[in-house]
Image (cartoon, rainbow, N blue to C red):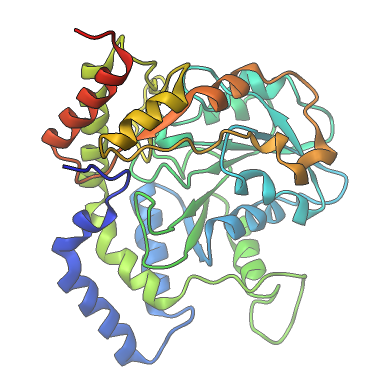
Length: 363
């Protein structure tokens, strides 16, 4: 049977009645923007993560730009960001007036490390964006020990855990996307910013609402970036199930690792972490041939970042200052195979058999 790359609907299916009830609750209230559902979701998300504050915004990209602005990032500043990541991690920087400075990633975890960040730090560095890539957990405390604030890009890591806590409560400020395919997905766009400091949280709230706290007095040039009541209500239904879904993703990763060790290069969890894999990304030198074989077998597979962010034409003004060998290798060799909270053992076995058939010599 075909095995899709993503399957968000199967996990949500048992919750459909509760989701419908939540939607009708909002419709009956007549309150659609920054109302009780957003307030409740912000409180519940902060409690789940162990963060002091959570603020809903329109999407994960806005979340990054607003988080940087809330930290005071602006013209003349530099923000360190990995190049092996989704485009938005770096795209969010130029709108602040700052410039992106690209760093490499750890070749095993594919996350930034203190070493890769340190290689590009300058006196102009105002922040580091540490991407918890594919659900793995970047070493935030080690990076902050370098003396620079860390913005956690936790868009792919909802439900992951680490020895230091959950992504979203490890650094100075963090951002989430609730795009429908994410581990915690809305039924439309949505995002959130979490942080420790009350003053930073208040600045985030002001920036998300046109630079105003009351729609009368404006203290900054802000954004119209608000999580709506419908999406907040839907997310509230799903949030209590995130740990269960994260455990299922982690267990699927364990099953893949047990079956594919020595067949392809596998993702490695960061020390002390338990990733709720958003994507399960394997590596092979003949990745296009492997992808073609999986497609022929009905297995969903995709390479996401074959062209690193720094090599995309709009980023040409900010060429890397140091070599990025791990980034280049990962871009050339990576392939995401099916992953979801509803991935069945039989589907995992089918995927693994297809990978082995494509990679191993005929037996």
